[in-house]
Each structure stands twice: as structure tokens, then as C-alpha cells.
Length: 198
Image (cartoon, rainbow, N blue to C red):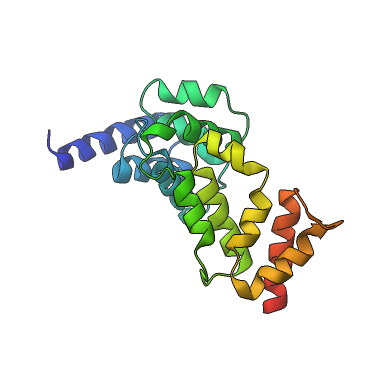
């Protein structure tokens, strides 16, 4: 079966499933688009898969947590049961999916690649955007590397911030001459720095 025939067959199968379910809700249309464009998730490139799913959800104005509800319709048989059964929240779901299929993920980062990205000077982004990129890069590390680097995550983030904002971010994150370890505080500081820049 050629690629176009396979895509048509998958779209037809999804149409039948969607018709049997709730009709043509935004989630159903998103599921169909995901299957047609990137196919069913089969355990390869989990990061790319989640990124494409998030893009569909944003484009169709569907809350991200609904991806968890639609996952069984876009995953190959057996995969959704393993990951979904262990996940109560969207964050847990994505974490388990990435962890379980990390070795087959083309976008996985080595510790060395992550550190090179952190030390790249002048990324040219505001603090909040850089924070999201930092979190994405950090999530792409192997679990062991994330565990090792977690204790210095705030310091690594401060090192990754552009020079123009680094001192201010560092000062705002200091408590009793130490950097805070509270990631929620880091997010708040980034928003504050960005607002002051505008």
C-alpha cells in the first residue's frame, strides 16, 4: 500500500470511529487531523508527536488536557493502555509517554548537547520565552540526566538567560544569598522581568 493510500485508509478508519462516537466535535476533528498528518503514534518520536498534537489543540482552541482523552484514538493498539492507565494528569501523561519511549525519540538530547545549549550566548529571547525553551530542552534529557541536573536547574537556567537580563533574573531569584529552588518562583520572575522590559 502506497503512502497516500495508507493515509486515506487511516482517515477513513478515523472517520468511522469519530462517527460512532460524538459526531464532529473539535476534538474529533483534531484527532482526525493528527492521524492524517502524522499517523498513529507507534512509539517513535514521542516529542514530535506531542508537539504536533499540541499544535492541533491550539489551532482548534481545545484545552491541552483534552489530548489525554483523545490519545487512545491516535495511538497504536496497546500503547495507550500502558501510558494512560498510569497517568492522572496531562503533565503525568506527557512525562510517562516521553519517558517510556525516550530511547526511540529522535529529538532526545544528551547532557553534553543540553549544556552546549545552556552556554550558548545571546539567544535573543525574552526571559519567559527562554524559560519555555529551557523546559523543553530539559524535558528532552534522559531521566538519569534530568535527575543529576535537577539540583542545579535554576542555576543552569540563569546561565542560559541573555546577558542583558541575567543579572536582574539572578538577583530576583536570590533568597538568603542562594538561588531559590522553587520553579514557580522562576516563572514569576521571568514574567516580571519581561513586563519591566516592555
